[in-house]
Length: 294
Length: 266
Image 1 (tube, rainbow over the protein chains, first blue to last red):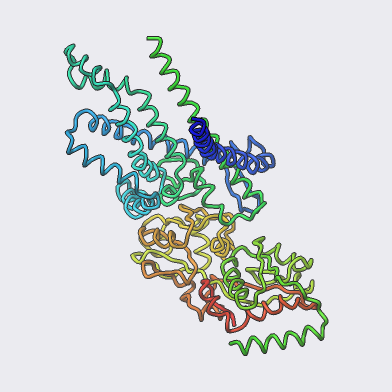
Image 2 (spheres, rainbow over the protein chains, first blue to last red):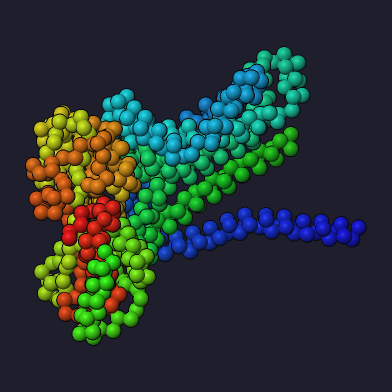
């Protein structure tokens, strides 16, 4: 008996340590980002940094304003969500409630495959197919633009949205739907008025994951967006927060204001992601308590 | 090759004993041009493998590198431009290590095949916006460039005198991306180091002269710049620094220099 207890304690201890590794990593990254991100913001000034419209880090008179990056990241993510969420949501709905087993198996396999494609491949296909296509279709001089990035991001977030939404929709108790059908509601009415509200928090979680993936993606976006620090506009070359860090990091010399400013951008991106998570957590929690009251 | 090196070593030892330089440190400090990162990195590695002496490199920019030599903070300064008269008067000496040739590339479908430096500069600063102004099709010119801090961008902009004035449509992070993009857009123009240009794009002649190792070396192809080793004229290098200097300016280093994408000067 005593031996057993000891063994249990040891196992618990090991689990605790393993769990703390994750926490440790988050803490380490947070602390590191804050320490290396603050000096440049201090030197440039918070207002000039966040709301400056010019970024010219290597110019003779350098400018470090990241408003174009922030707006581009926000617009790009919003655009990707706008395109990706409806497609992903209805796909999940179809797969979970309507499709027969065979079709579901085939489409789910395709979705899983889509999730496994490395982002550099998305970028390459976007660069070689999508960018020239946008140039021809919209008759613009060059296709590398915010639009190209939005389309690539929308495709990239699809698997996340579909998979998480399916899980949520599958988890809706069959009794709810049966009851609705028994009361004379059509299947479509049942899906939208019973299944979806019951799976609401799961679907919201799918959207968060989509936002998180879209705002954090660098590689694919870097290859299709053109990377010029313009204010965002659909057919203009733009630079995201992620690509701003990634594209200049290699050449910036350690300790320079440029390098520090890149860390500050990373810090801003990090805060963005924390903000998104916190907001959605808030909504999800409110959602749950709402249900309990009922 | 070993013979040459041993001969050089002997020669250097004699020089050292004459001047009495006490170079006992086993590291060579090279500071300067960010563009020379690749070539100095490759040379340093090869030198270290051969002699066991480490070579350190700080990418602080040509100007700062020259100043560092002047103040004795490093052994060899690296500059991606020729020394100015004032710098020479101050007792510095430049030895050209290699030439960095930058090819101006367009899509193979583009009828334009020659531009001069002035029109290239005007195109990149946005003064010339349409290909028909330089004898091409009626289409907007799409400017492809590299990201801030890139050695190729720095080189291109300093040669064409367009620093901080270029109105890029795309800033890409690798030479490969620039070539792919120019190859896929019929109205694009880009620049890339000569060694990496492929058949999928068309290199322009500049002022009628095609870029080649020869035209870069004799200076007739103008979109190029020298990679200069900066040393002090009147004080000798430390033993290990001199060894490194001799090694990288010898014929033996030429292959390494070519592999780094630039044209060896010697």
